[in-house]
Image (tube, rainbow, N blue to C red; front, side, top):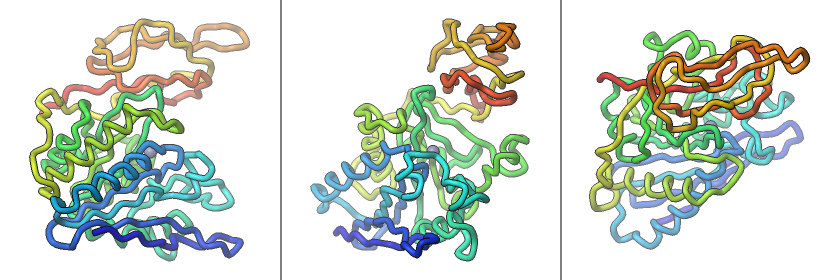
Amino acid sequence: MHDAERVTLARLPSGVELETTVHTYGDGDGPTLYVQAAQHGREINGSEVLRRLHAELLARQDDFSGTLIAVPVADPITFDRVSYTAPEPLDSVNANMNRCWPGDEDGTLHERMAATLWEYAGDADAIVDLHTGGLEMLPHTVYLKGDAECRALAEAFGIDLLLAEAAGEDADAEWQDRDFGGKLRVAATQEGIPTITPELAHNTELVEDAIDAGLAGMLDTLRHLDMLPGEPASKNATVARNHLGRVKAADSGLFHVDGPVELGDYVEPGDYVGTLYDPTSYEALQEVTVDREGIVYSLEREATVTAGSNLVGVALLLEE
Ligand SMILES: [Zn+2]
C-alpha cells in the first residue's frame, strides 16, 4: 500500500546530493494523483497536511484505489533556508522553483530538481501543488481560467475562494513579466493534467485551521477522483473570481494601513485602505483606495514598499 523512496533531486557544488522523499500509496489501478508541498520552503503547512494524510490513508487502505504520489518537501534548499527562493550562488537564473516547470535535466539547479519531480508529476491524472500565503492573504485555490476540469478539482478541494488565473495569450502583461508560465500548475495544465494550487494560510507557522483545511481538501480531492469512497462535501457557497486584480504602489515609501478594509471584505471603488508616505519628509505620496468591486484577498502588511509593488489584491466576480 505504501512505499517511501529517497530520490536525488540534484547535486550541489560540494558534491553533496540533494535528496527528498517521495511517498507512493495504492496498487496502480485507477487514477494517479500527484501532490507536493513546500516548493516554496517556508510554506510548511502543506508538509504537515501530507503527514496527516499519510496517517489517514494507512487507516483507510481498504477503501483506497488508484495511486497517490506525495512529496512533502519538494524544494529542500528553500525549506532549509525557510525562504521563498534559492540563494544566488545556487540558482541565480531560477531562484524561484515555481517558475521553471516542467524543468530541464541539463538546466540550472531548480530546473534539474523540477525535471526530477516531473518524472512523477508528468504521468499523473491530476496534480495538487500545496502552497501557503502569509497572514496578509486570504486562503484560496487558483486554477486555470476557463478550464472546467481544473475548476471542478478546485471546487472539490473546497476552500471558499476560487481564483481563476488566465494564462498565455489570455493573460495580462504582469503574468508574462513574472514568468508565470513556469508555474507547476500552468505547465501541467498545458500538458492536459488538471492542476490546482491551494494557498493555505500562515507561512512559517504550523496553524491548525490551515492544516485542517488542507487535509479536508486532500480527502475531498481523493473522493472527487473516486480514489476514496463518498462525495466531496457540498461547496455551494463557492464563487469563482478573477485573479490579479491589484492596486499597486504609485511610489516607494512606507505603506500605513489605517482604513477599515480587512481581508475578506467586500469593497467598492473608492474605499480607503491606507496611505503611502515618504518616511523622511512625511509627505503623503498616495492615498490608497481600491479601484474595483470585489473581495479583498491580499493586503500588504510589510510596510516598506517599492513603486509598482502590490498593495491590495481584489478578486472580481467571474462571469463564466
Ligand atoms: Zn508558494
